[in-house]
Length: 107
Image (cartoon, rainbow, N blue to C red; front, side, top):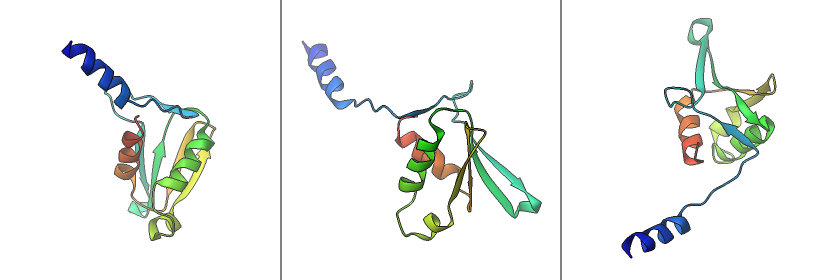
């Protein structure tokens, strides 16, 4: 009796969201988010690699929900799709912010 009520409550609490993109974790269980630092530390970019599906939809979601609209971070954020399956973010040191955003989305 207890397990039945628990499973019903659990199934109602879990919401499965379908996105037009998917990011699989690597063999160590980490998200495919990497940094690239060049020019003696003056050029700092964040790379999201191996996006499966619609990478442009991920770019649009990041642009609209990563930072509040009108914030200084949102003004500096520059996103682009590279080779149709990688995303490059420039304008700040946002690797942890992007990882936390992806975790909050269920990846």
